[in-house]
Image (cartoon, rainbow, N blue to C red; front, side, top):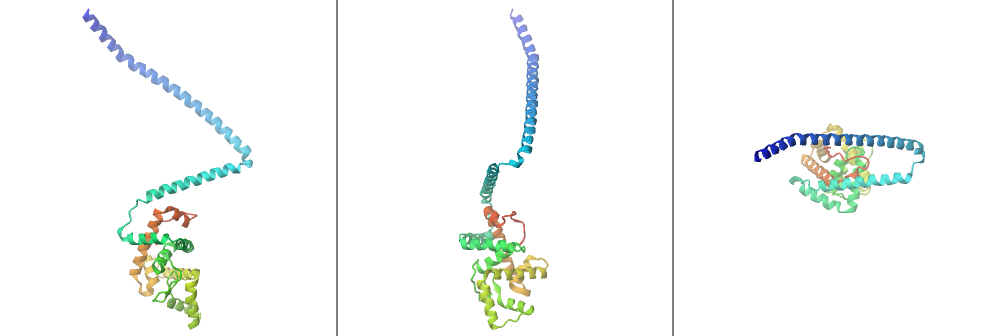
Length: 270
């Protein structure tokens, strides 16, 4: 009797080994078939819906709802603001190189002053038209620390530190007579007229860019030292540009303000 029970149990076990996989395969096959049927149903309904939407768009395009457009525009703007905030949070963790720490701290202090911050924005946008946006910001930072009414003992005047002797020589080469009183009027204009001061700096940069064949280190060195080239000055300008770009990297909202129509080109070497 006991032997018979064992035979029955073994038989049932062998049957289960065959039956279970078969049952599982049947269930999977049936489920897959139902899923495929459902997918076909969804695709069919989606095609019908797309056809209906296209038809509605064709018939109601001229009566487009402006309110809906404004809602979509506001939604996209909110997504952009959110993305910028996320980038700013991530950017805050970028380390500051040791050789730029003092420049970066100084720039942070400068940016706390609303007048200087607005002056930087104005200077950047004006000089960007000529491709000197970073150079002009760094030079103004070096020469005057973004102060407009500056007089230097080396006869450099205004925001961009324009040298009056160099300017007089340049004007005389153009055939303009400069006397004692004319020179005083030039000095006054360099100090009081910020746009004139910036224009003279841009003219100077254009000249040295042509002479130095696009070598930015030599261009900056010539801006301060002329034909003698002050490379110590040029290396300092290069560090200030790097610090300014790093500041923009950590403050993307300011970068967007400076470049309202295009992204900031952080890889530029000027």
